[in-house]
Length: 121
Image 1: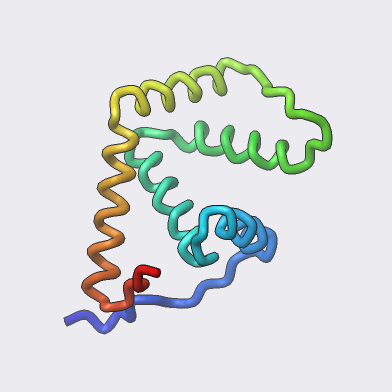
Image 2: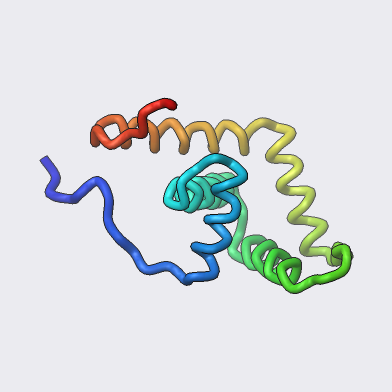
């Protein structure tokens, strides 16, 4: 049996926790569940073949959007067009949804094994 606890504490930037809190309220999740959800999506995208440069382009685009006060003007570049096409192809093929569902199922089974699952309301 492993001595690793089912949950551990980590330090996260206050801005990330604030964004997670806002998103969590909308989705009726806890802050921790929202961050876990985002991490699961990130793992699924990585597993689906999203490259480091694709990830950096998405992150940069998201960060630019946070500082925009007018309606966003979507930048165009060959890299973003390729990324958009890649994500759309993954979504259309069902690979992205399948991998995200696999990750969610694994997380649920880990939670069930630890006995720390949330009770339904």
